[in-house]
Length: 202
Image 1 (tube, rainbow, N blue to C red):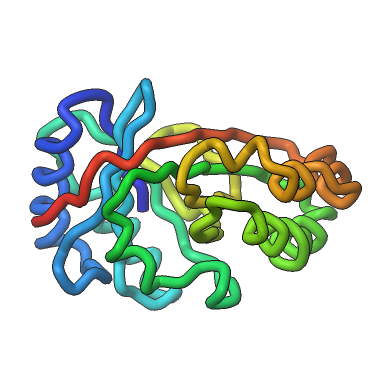
Image 2 (cartoon, rainbow, N blue to C red):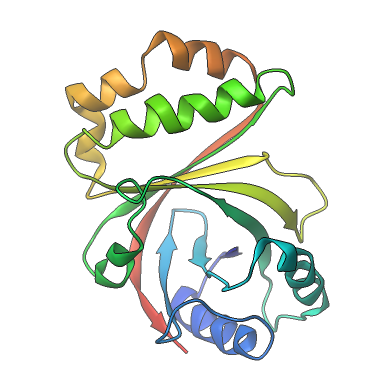
């Protein structure tokens, strides 16, 4: 899940994690997570250790929470990717400067299978060849505290810095004919880049 806040990020993050500890099961053994920020907001990513059939109960718990500070939450279900593209062992060691690129997209119903094939068979494998790539993860949107529905799919790509975006392998990954077809059949799209701030502990 992602949680958003406009200011006072570190103090807010600790408060949120402590609040969630009694309500939602955390995947991390040390009850910590990473805090990110953009020029507009802070983002906190919190992984819950539940099976897919328990997602609806997590949504119910989130909707019952009353945060002490204004906070927007979004709940996602992680999609499977080959281990080499999304190594969970990397997350505890991500303590140095890096950025995340969050791409949200909703394909048309007819193009959804092709959309998912493109991500798993071409786009992420090609991104992984670019200098500075760390990992990629994919999620399906479940629910949000906002009234408006967000894009159905979210991809998160971790990079050492934004210099990767000027490299040949990255440019090749974002300019293939298959990508053009996929993007032209997307009905909702948003992109956000956030910077690592610090690890936050409960």
